[in-house]
Picture 1 (cartoon, helix red, strand yellow):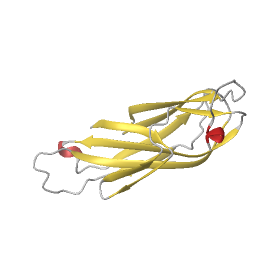
Picture 2 (picture 1 turned 120 degrees about the vertical axis):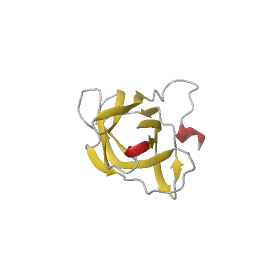
Picture 3 (picture 1 turned 30 degrees about the vertical axis):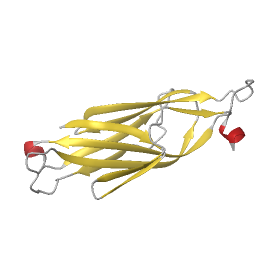
Picture 4 (picture 1 turned 90 degrees about the horizontal axis):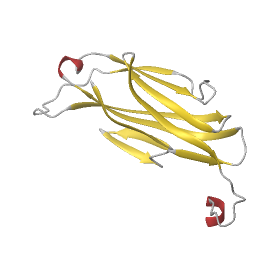
Length: 147
């Protein structure tokens, strides 16, 4: 089993074997004051399974860690699989997984981590940084100014 890819987005879903993503590629969040409520964060993952892994049930676990070591998303554990058998003609078999978290309270600036584990093996540790927006800097354009 291996992670084909994983990333953070504002929201996502899977339909018939495809991801539909809004605001993908989150690497930083800028805000003026803390604490702030992050309205949504999606974790998108594509996990390749091989051989007898296809017919087994696996355990997907998602954890999070703020700079002070506390979680900002409640820990989530869910089963993955088995994958339905089909004629794949030698092509890889994947689990497509999306977790949408809503209303996270962000209390500190700095790196925030989201860890994906399968069967207690860490597959990925995704990072985004919470930064002070520094709106008062001359010449800086903010989203509110662009609108």
